[in-house]
Image 1 (cartoon, protein in one colour):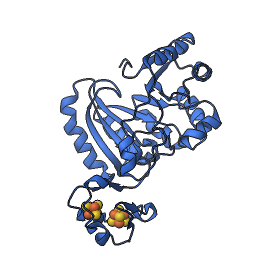
Image 2 (spheres, rainbow, N blue to C red; image 1 turned 60 degrees about the vertical axis):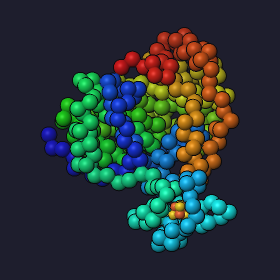
Image 3 (cartoon, rainbow, N blue to C red; image 1 turned 120 degrees about the horizontal axis):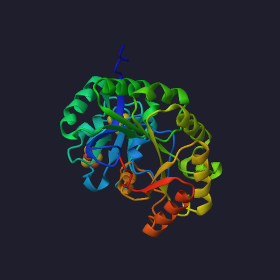
Image 4 (cartoon, rainbow, N blue to C red; image 1 turned 180 degrees about the horizontal axis):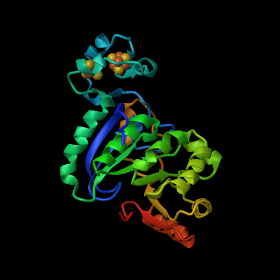
Length: 311
Ligand code: SF4
Ligand code: SF4
């Protein structure tokens, strides 16, 4: 088989020793760029498809070395705070601001990596996976970098590495389809079945997500586990759970992993100069998750709470 050329990709993190996103011990690879803007997202640094400044004002000594270093005049100092012009930063390749900062107040979130370099890291991590582990691509939305993802997954499969991806599904089917033969496992997120409710909290319609879910259910021969973040007051009501159950029944799929809202990503919003809109949402109680599980079970759907997915 001829291997696709390993291209460059944009990541914002690589984490080892994960045991919650696929079988065994895994390396999680976070790809930059997403087509949704979920209000509760715990990885807001993965939203844009370009590296961007992460600014921690509590470490800043306001010597303005970053402002002097930036060749694009993208930084403005306002009342003991720095503002970054995202439009200018999105084209940056030098990142002189972060190089000039000696306190660690300014870092760059995200980086370009060659496929060969990433494969070396993966092969190195392989030593601790044991027999069942592998890689899981997540993000951001991995399928927004389809050529990079396909070539990487193909290379992994040729090396007998177990592969999984977590996707929001909001990409053209042509971005997903070429990778499927190299994937063992797909986690597929569904946030809301009602289109207007979907738009309200993600900024995007759900039509393509549901269409792709249906197509995937027919075409993918590996394991397909749906996921739903549980956002109290948004998607945890019985009517919505029954709607989603009906959809899964209609496409012949019977596994869903529900993930309770948490606020672990909250601090990153201030580093990015963004507002965290779900600040006041209270994470769901155990009883509420158990009730959602029972409604799914009424529809013959295996519902796993949090980290309970059997791998
Ligand atoms: S990322 Fe580039 S453009 Fe933006 S502030 Fe830093 S040096 Fe300037
Ligand atoms: S160089 Fe670093 S410490 Fe100095 S003003 Fe810029 S962010 Fe703050």
